[in-house]
Image (cartoon, rainbow, N blue to C red):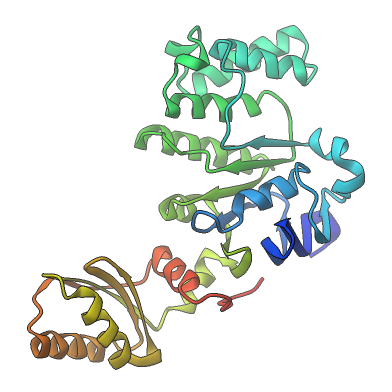
Length: 321
């Protein structure tokens, strides 16, 4: 990959809020110009910390980082002038929706006529017309989120960092927002996108980095991630009664290392290389223990299955790019 195609280059990035306790622990990756790069992980995995490091809000404890060819430690102001950031926090609650966009336009030095043109275009694009004169303080969480994302487009940028931008949005507005992002990517924008929503990642992202406990567990295209488990199928299983924990402990032992069992209460998701053999083991164990089966289904793998497999094995890498 040439330097002109690389907009972010991270090498062995570590960050500790307290000595010896790393929120980021040796992350190395690159982001390509014009792609949507997804960061996928559970709460506390390190996604938001990584966004803060890449947007110059935090200086990493160790490692090397370049954003748009610049060093964040020396060139923070130059980097910030070329990026957009939507974080999970809120701001400018004291003013109206129109005022939010106007303030951003003023901060970015837009002439008045251009500021008004962009403001009106974004209000229409993000479905904010009925809210334009309402104070942000009075908006719902989802409505505030729409304003936060819309106002970043008041200025031109090369990279847009989105930290869970669809939280609180309804299904229609979530899809509208994702489609707006895709349209900007087609015009050359690079997007770094964190989410808990696997369907969103599948819909939007070109490549996905799975992060857990500050470590990079997987970094691949969607197609390659799914291909890694192409020989496996997924079994969805729910048992009745209160014997789930003991049942799944025994099931893990009998299935062995060729299958992965991820448990949540009475339900489990099982990735099996030999689904017929796994079904036989499940049925035999259920009969032996007198455990009823409320749900049993075999299906092809999804991105969610890959994610469960990734975070279920701490430190195990399932891909590289």
